[in-house]
Image (tube, rainbow, N blue to C red; front, side, top):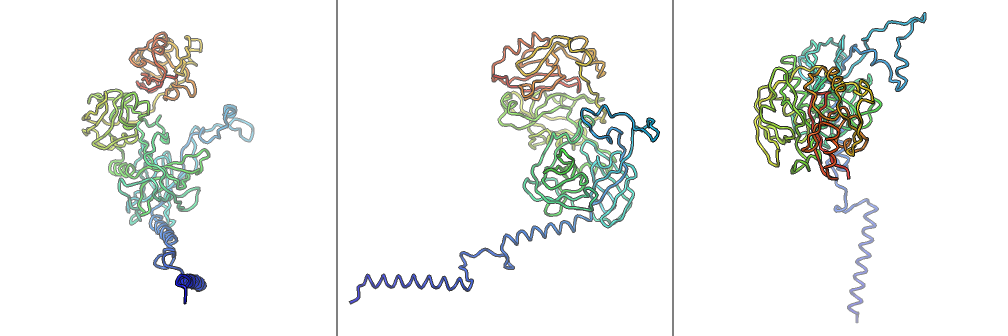
Length: 525
């Protein structure tokens, strides 16, 4: 008689053996269980490969579609003799003499000379309007545009806006391929972008990358000395942007222009990992005004502003590190200051403009600048622990003028003019003597009554509390917290009354900009 247990065990072992033999046989025929199969595309290729192929095809399509609208801009750019000379560091002053002619005599060199220069641009209308950077065409003569099909045209500047580094030029041609513009919003960090242009004399190259950041400001790409109303709100990308790319388009994966390449962050002038582009939301508005009127009319609030810092949040009891702090008021020749007229005060924090949140100075600048002078806008501000709604009638941006600069006062008055006090706040101060006041007035052509009583900031200690707070030399401290400061003795008394770790505001007047500023400082322990 058969043992039931032994019979069952024999059948089980036989079944396992048959399964193993079946798997081995299937493997020799390259059969694979469906559950273990790699997912495939419609053509049998792995999905990953298909996705990459789709991306590559998209890049090819963008190149074929957008490249015909990208142009090369060339000409002779007027530059100063100083710009053409190499930077020789501390030995520079020994080589600032005119070159010698063949007979060894000094040669007269003109202050202005010309050099071949150029950049890129993108056709935005079939009738010959081209968008580019202001710095590409500024001071340029014999301006020429070379199209993708090698045709060359003389070009004229329609208008320039140094405050945004945008310019529009035009060629006498029609039925040109124009690039498609993206909508004003929708750009996101991480999305694919491609930069097109004409770098280093190469013809119409394209590089790929992603958007690394948006809303980049305070990069000093645009010189605020010449453009105090400069708007910096850049797209940052790791797509390779080189000097010749300036003015070319930055496009998204749909082939739409989302920005105008404008600058790179580099110590050598060559690409080192990231570059910046002007958002199309700014470039398009500027271009439309330049084409319509040849200039840009821009509204202003009439304030000096600062980004909110953690110290500001603590000192002003803000719910979060958001908004833009009003740091001072700007005089607008021939018109009242809009912010003052509306009742805004120093240290108010602007949270919203027309219902839209603003978190950085660049966002506030853009929100205000593209209104029309005379428009009334709603502001939401933070003051004394509460949100307040205010209406402001915007003013008109005055014409840009060269700002005066202040040479070191110490060089004029001598280091021995007044006793210097080394403060625990990380800055050296001294009494503002009549001689120093006279020097400032003469240097900057300011009325004497504009210079307040206070202590002059002679030096800032590196990495000290004042340095961390963004306080610079050349200012006049007039207030510490609630304490008025007119002399070094009053300054010492005010500092002695501070507690370690306390956050306190210093009110400082800077003659260079004729402005009163506040700086939040944490008292060292």
